[in-house]
Image (cartoon, rainbow, N blue to C red; front, side, top):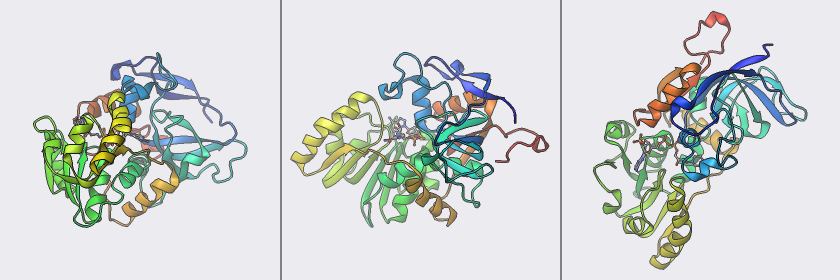
Length: 333
Ligand SMILES: NC(=O)c1ccc[n+]([C@@H]2O[C@H](COP(=O)([O-])OP(=O)(O)OC[C@H]3O[C@@H](n4cnc5c(N)ncnc54)[C@H](OP(=O)(O)O)[C@@H]3O)[C@@H](O)[C@H]2O)c1
């Protein structure tokens, strides 16, 4: 086995050009850990947030400099080695999972706790599998309770979680409005959304009312959210600037209770038990996986810049195998 690998490192928060291709030792798995030979890692907004160091929660564990040198949470690949106590996997197994705690997916090898990984379904490619673990549970839990005829609004619906959330809410019979930038309106329509709003031109809180608002990028005031909710309606956000999220947690709770609505933050439960059901729906053909582009590992800065510029229509995937000669033995994606 090789002793060194290519990894995309950074040691300060900033734009994608702070990222560097590095030659680093392949880490050894500690007890309970699995060393995964990475085949594909999909980009989530959380990667962008940890690259930029904003919102402030992206600096947890690393206030001035990043806590982790290599980003990339949503990994899919092949088990290379396991640490002591690992019972569910052995070398050669194909796995995928959301490695939000350790990250490290923008590399040829990544360490992950056994508990975050699941066997990769044979019916999904590595690239497809890598799109599910983080975005899937956010979507599934975010639109839980949306039933036939309920009016659902998804803010940030043109991104990774939104792609799944639109399809899930539609399959539950809801009337769905998607909010995102103008370049993503047709993309959202292609996923089955009933109505679209361009967030740069219009304010969704002046539309509605809605029975359920799933906010993937909270930027508005608690009173604006209250205005957009129908009586008995529910607002949930999963991310956004810390002051906004804190106001939702505190003032939102009070305003919601006083007005017969529920306004709060959704603490998304991650892990194989949560993303497995989405993978099953994808395998059954009920939910579609959309991949916009796959970039080579060295192109990770370009991949993040592409997502950060708001151009991605579907998931963006980074793969150490992309662009390589298959005869070189890289894992196919
Ligand atoms: N609670 C948890 O446990 C947990 C765990 C992981 C992640 N998260 C959060 O989950 C959220 C969703 O992540 P994701 O990976 O699905 O994001 P994503 O793929 O980047 O999608 C977000 C979408 O929102 C759009 N957007 C940006 N600003 C907007 C605005 N002001 N109004 C409406 N839309 C806007 C973006 O468009 P542009 O391209 O124009 O920017 C993008 O299409 C993030 O907030 C992340 O922090 C939560």
